[in-house]
Length: 115
Image 1: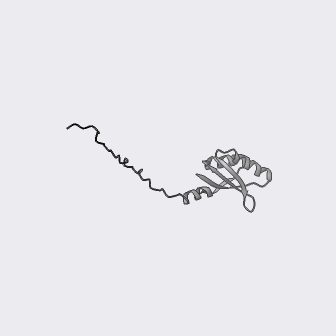
Image 2: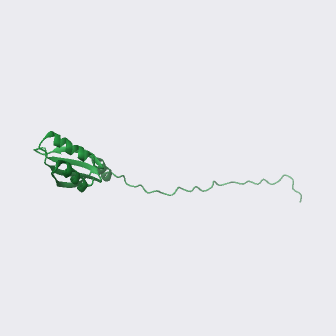
Image 3: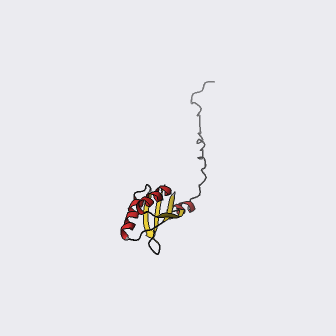
């Protein structure tokens, strides 16, 4: 399942922002990263199977200040379409059994008959 994680990071300069992005990019399962917020102080991480606590601990070691703001599941548009547009199963009927064709037997009486 995809998770969207928003972490508030104290990053006063561009060098600290790139360091925070590098640390987050090294985490296992990260798909995308973005810096958001008015002060560009929120790190948005989207990934599959990302360990949030380990990510925050690594950020605290490198950047000194990291705080979890939001963790939520993200559904893809493709997954939503697949869930909504499932075709109905058509019933499967057994094959029709055909009767053997009728066989007509005509026995001619023999021409030679002794009485």
